[in-house]
Amino acid sequence: MSLTPHSQALNPLEEAHTLQGMIGTGRSQRDVARSIGRSEPYVSQRLGLLSLHPGVQEALANGEIAATVAEQLFRLSLQHQIAALPHIRGKSSRQAQQIILQHSPVSRNSHVKEPAPQDEDTDLYGLLLADGNDPLLVAALHQLAEAHHALEEVYATYPLHKSTGVLREHLRSTARTCQRCSCLILEALGTVEA
Image 1: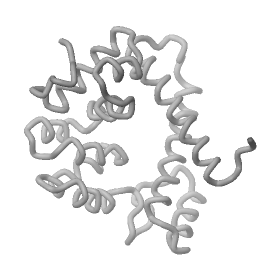
Image 2: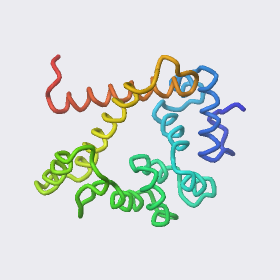
Image 3: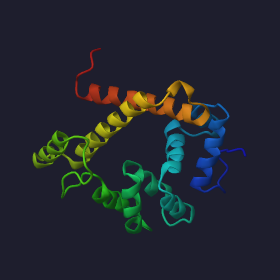
């Protein structure tokens, strides 16, 4: 199935499956993005829809939530995605963002809802919130720490050189994205040497 900018008949989930199929033929996300006249982040966000909880995917396919709302669920665990779903059905992207923030591991009115990898991390997040730091930044820090632990486990446990096809492309793309984000954060903090 070919995907063009004029393929308006596809719902976001069908589009994601089509994009996944295109990447499965060995094409990069960048190449696919160029061929359909979209940005690489657009392709990445659409592919991300495939990693959402099946119940969220069903709500998206049925038109109960918009793709922009579903994309905001990426930051939540599958458990938190399904918990947030009844509250975001039919909501605007802005309304959903506020609701999703309440279901995040760290919210304005609470400390870490999920156990952090280590006790000192829990204390750190609580201290950061108590110190008046932006809860979204504290949640981002928490997620970066979780991603770091997950990447270490993947690297130590799995023979990455044996990965193929779509998995290999997603691993490569995600690693590049993490690297770019890390550089941007370090640059913003003024810790990158020119």
